[in-house]
Amino acid sequence: MQWSFKLFRLWTINEYLDNLQLRLTLPSYLYRILKYSLFTTVLLLWLILFNYLLDFYYSRKVVFLDLPSKFFMAADNNLRRMFLVDIYIGNYENIQKIDLYLAIATLYFGKFFEIWLLAQIIQLFASYMMVTHRYQTLLHQVKAFIRFKDLPKRMSRRIYSYLNFRFQYWVFNERVLMDSLCLTLKM
Image (tube, rainbow, N blue to C red):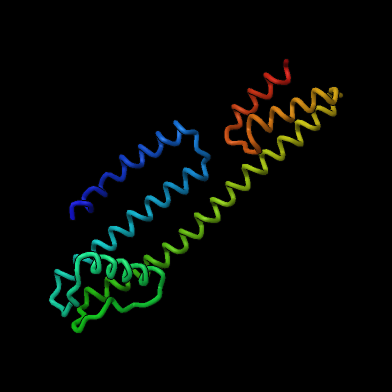
């Protein structure tokens, strides 16, 4: 029960993740994956806690199991309802109205959660592809600039090797990239 109250510290964990991303200069798509997985895990843990507490609050015939088995049974019930596998709340004889309302609310929430999860995955892939596309576009622009200035082959190879060494086929911060390119081309 005590671990569930620590989940209220989600905002401080979120701030810590922001600071960690700035310190380690994580790519935005990795940072967003960490953040979304954190929020999804916290949401699932809260749903498991509510399902677990409802077992003790209502008078029903509950299968007596040890604590880890009850936790995994509650987790299984929530995951099945969230992904629309079944609407039945468990192995009970007396199902009350609140149980059905909770099951229907979880089903609706599960459908919205699936849509949100798919949208986030598509957005992460789009941002990942945008970063690689930016790098390729930058290389084409540099190649056009080298052709326009008619630079020697050795110098153009040095510029390409510098780009590959400095950014390793990834472009995360355009301002840093443009500043370093301007300094390199001025030399």
